[in-house]
Amino acid sequence: MALLPLSFEVPGDVVERAAQVRLLVLDVDGVLTDGSLFLDDKGREYKAFHSRDGHGLKMLRGQGVEVAVITGRTSGVVKHRMHELGVERVYQGCADKLPFFHQLLDELGMDAEHTAYVGDDVVDLPVLLNSGFAVAVADAHPLVREHAHWTTPSAGGRGAARECAELLLFAHDRLDAAMEPYFAAPRR
Image 1 (spheres, one colour):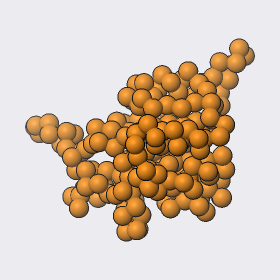
Image 2 (cartoon, rainbow, N blue to C red):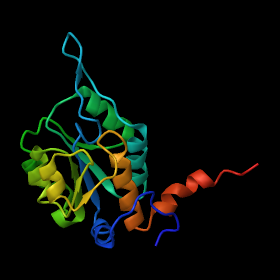
Image 3 (cartoon, rainbow, N blue to C red):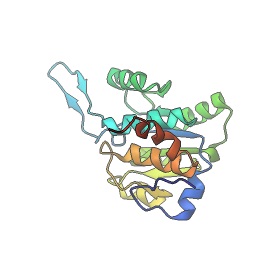
Image 4 (cartoon, one colour):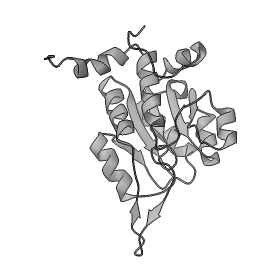
């Protein structure tokens, strides 16, 4: 098991379930953001993403876990942010997310039992109920939290995706490897 501990407690059965995950799929609004929608007078949309969430996704990808996004809205901001993070599988405008989840699994040749899905609202339930590791953010709708295998300590857009990434790295015994580059600099 990893030498570095997680900064939050997780039951053993959750770690076992997380160890099976090879693909992390995330919703955007309410998961990678706090759910706020900022629109200017011309209808242009703005979103705020937490930088630690983004870095967690980069670390996860760097350790061999695939990352994808399935979101109900369509936004150039999401396309741009996911491109920055190297997330290539981005499905936007998905009012019904389940068909896109199945399409993603087909594209990757993967079974649902090897996926984690992170959601916050009832529109996420169909995918949550079909994934191997269902994750709710701390401020998710009560029904989402009720049907999740694990609820993050932090709210959406406030570090929940980073916590999920670190849990997956820990469960795969890759957290130390992901953190190693930050300890490699010579000390003075």
